[in-house]
Image (cartoon, rainbow, N blue to C red; front, side, top):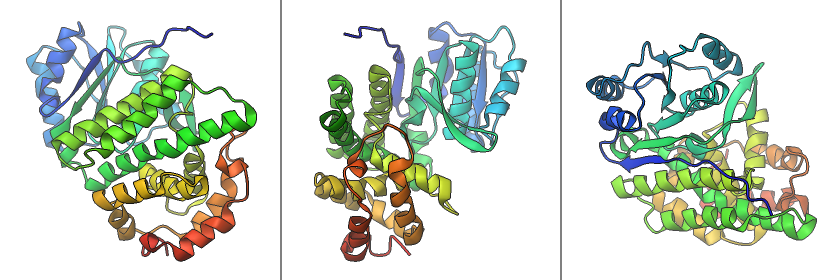
Length: 347
């Protein structure tokens, strides 16, 4: 039995008004000198964080504002990192958080995630998504020591980002079932605790899938626990299955890829029908949250999706899913032709 230790966040604040208190949280944790890696944020958000740090005498030096999450840029930042830096703070969306997370990993420093939107579970995953020589790569990293989510700030972000987070979360249902299919067909081990945790987070959110303070806090908590599920089992299995393979194929081939969570959420809806389970549940939450309407506002390409579904089984070696059992492309075409919920979602 593998009894290896895992590292999980010890500082967790998911509530309204958390961002202005960032300096308080860092001070209580003993951090007096940090490097802040941020995205291009509204001035009001930046000022809230900056003022909170200054009021608690947290020295930051010049903030690093990024719009390119390349491996090469992280290495350059690492070379210039001041020796007195005690922790790395990632503030913003996916690019800034992935940069900050990997920089902390290279420097062997604590990392604190401060997402300003909840579009996916990447803020608390043990991986960083970076570009290397222009190609996207997932690189090993460590979970954050702290997760600070200001619910008010996340509510002020574009609603499409919340819907992306909803899509990424409900995709855990199909991912966990793919994992169990892999066990029954290839004897790939399943970590029951990681699978249970990932599954449970979805059902907790489904009890209150609302775009308000309570719903946003629940989504943030669920996505954070998904990251911990990955850390528990040492792989992405509890959070990523055939729906992610389809999304990866879209990223590689689409002329205009959509938000990650919108892609995997839609892919999970297809996969749920391939798996013959949870389709009504996904349809219900997508209707209640307005997910379908968001997709219809910027429809997917039917041609790109059928191509991606055909490519998906070969996107990752030795990764058994429902797509490994049979050719699902004819079934996908029937769904596209006949499912009334998908009207207007594809062109």
